[in-house]
Amino acid sequence: MSNHSSLSGRVAVVTGASAGIGKAIALDLASKGAGIILNARRTDRIEELARQINDQYGPFKGNPRAICVTGDASEDSVIDQMLQAGNDHFGSPADIVVANAGRGLDGSVMTSDTDQWESMLKTNILGVAKMIRKAGTELLELQKNRDWTNHPTDIVILGSTVGRHISPFSSMYGSTKFAVNSLAEAARRELGPSGIRVSLIEPAIVKSEFQEVAGYDPDGFGKIMDKFGPVLVPEDIARSIGFIVSQPANVHICDIVVRPTRQDYP
Image 1 (tube, rainbow, N blue to C red):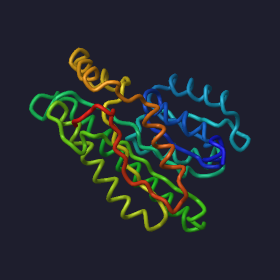
Image 2: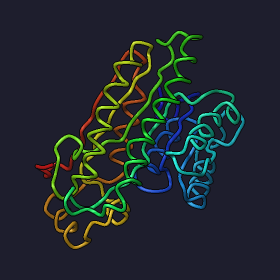
Image 3: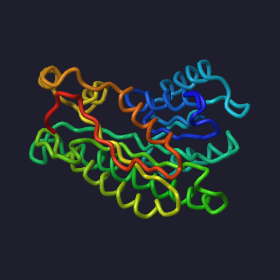
């Protein structure tokens, strides 16, 4: 099977697709033949990405291959729009859901900005939990009417190595990724018996906009990247997710931890 057709006929939702890992995931899944529902808060960014995908990879089931749903991925109405877009635009529901939207925060429980805690918890934990709940409900209904062994179905959740090995320099952020780790494993046990794969991917240092938005000191973090470099780039994570969702339906890659080769910790 050619690379371009390995996800032929499947529809993917990708949250946080305006830059970095999310953008790379969308491009990789489109290159493998999927239709893409792009989500982010920045309309101009995802509209430009949609144009790129549509120009490069052509139509999907007679429609543009990529469409946009702008908004906060932790809001119920936005999640509902994303999931409905599959039926409305492509005539079939999304059977790849990538919960990538998230944000970082520099500092520990003692030093991080408490004014940002609630926003981070909403995005990183509640947003993911809502997506699992809503996507899981739709996918369970979908599985009732088809032979799951012929239809791979995936929910992929972005965690972090600091959600497995806590680090004091970002322990508040890390605590949200510990929670995501638990949500993913619990959902895997609950949904897996119905043929729905729930996978967690935990990247270490990935060079992107993430560090700046999280408020990490550019000089200090630059030294860390130099120490462990060359660090990961978004395409490394996208490639891993493409591998996960391209497996036959009876093969479930549950967890992947991805680090730069020279990064020893976290």
